[in-house]
View 1 (cartoon, rainbow, N blue to C red):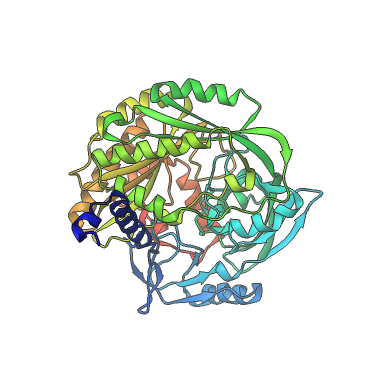
View 2 (tube, rainbow, N blue to C red):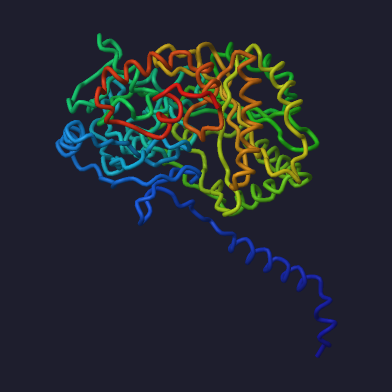
Length: 495
């Protein structure tokens, strides 16, 4: 028998041990879910958990009559109501102190798919995935939704979300009609051509103008696309994108900017989805695959410094592997999300989104580069991702983030949760917001309120009209949330 030492020197045995160690480590990477919503003590939070508030109770939506009675009772008794879906907003948009929170997730039926008119009617608590499952057999797909399909229809409409499609604009552009429970307890069917103009305030209205009961959305064909990917320099992107817009073959597009130390804000990769002329009614919705591997890569990047470089190289390699492959429209609109869950107790990951006019992108990015440190390894404030999406001019909502054609820069940020660390993050984001405003840009409202009231007023000049219509349509101020209190209810002192 060979000695043990000789056996251990066998390279195949050593390789097996290494592989076994890697597999065990890989399988034990935790896939956790951030806990938020309602606690046992009636303490409500949304996705970041940074703005907890004591509420009165949560009511699971059962039917229209129940909801109507709750609203009418609130008008009589002075109670306040907030509306909640998946609560992925981050600034207290779904609850209010001592309020009754309507949990709309149970109000989730797909009511009708009209193949001839290419529309779907669905209750507001359903998710975009629910809609996708219902429309695939008809060869249909959504015109606009977010890049993930996990959110509720009502929540997405309340923030007037946008996505990867470059031909249809924001979500408001695809809404045909809404059944609305108004703040005074009436049930109305509203559309874009109504004289009362309810849609201007409900869409992008953050749940302050009543309860969306159901909605009829315009659909399009479930096209099959060929994916084109390319690596470019950041200062080439403006011209690249204008070429994309002039190509009729491209339906959807987005890009990512490097936040790696060695190429910080200097290089990007772009992804285009080009028509093949084929429509699909059979391909199932893709499931989330490789979650642990994706989480491992992201966790490496979360360390900053050279590890952020490694993460960027990994991303580029993966994106290059997609070039030339095909995908259905519905599957483009359901990116993985589980791997992004972040549950460290001493820090939090938040989103911010800045909108900048398309023709100012190049100059804007040069200024952003001067604002932020390229190496955040030893920084409490870390930027993990910047995704760029096109947002067409929107004149259908009052709190309008795109008064002209814009790029939306979706920024994933990590920072600490103690008072000093939050204040530090707020100062950086306030400076970033000021810079954006200098370039005639705006910022998105569903996120944590780092911005000052004055920055809000400058970004959303129609806020006073919004407030006036809120008072007129909700005279008893039944529908409330923390976001409304922070920015609109009283002008107050500018922070």
